[in-house]
Image (cartoon, rainbow, N blue to C red; front, side):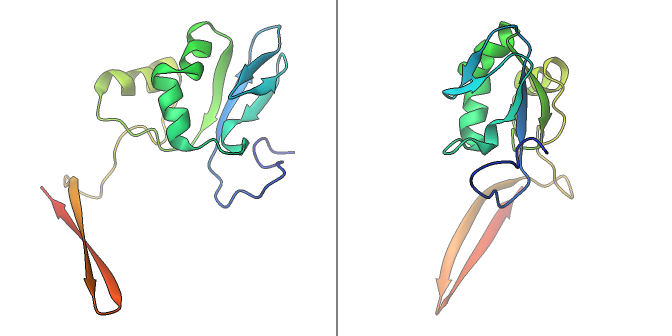
Length: 130
């Protein structure tokens, strides 16, 4: 059994944020119980999304459980992109998350906005770069 894919609903993409209970007591994350030593993919919990997890790492339940050493992050490939060096440092050095932390681009260009235009029956998206 692979953690995160044994769910009652089908995930369309293999995104995951797996945490492990490293205490000797039962804890809850997003109202989901975790027994001692158990690990689970938070992305497999219904109605939990990447922004929910990112916000919780910044100032919520996940941050609290990480700070008190109740859980550890064992795998992550979700989008936790941040332009804040302190948050990137926390994710990479303290939590060991390296995938999806910093913005990537094929060049030094950064997308600053997009414009949608309707032309006949088609929508067109234009990215304005600096």
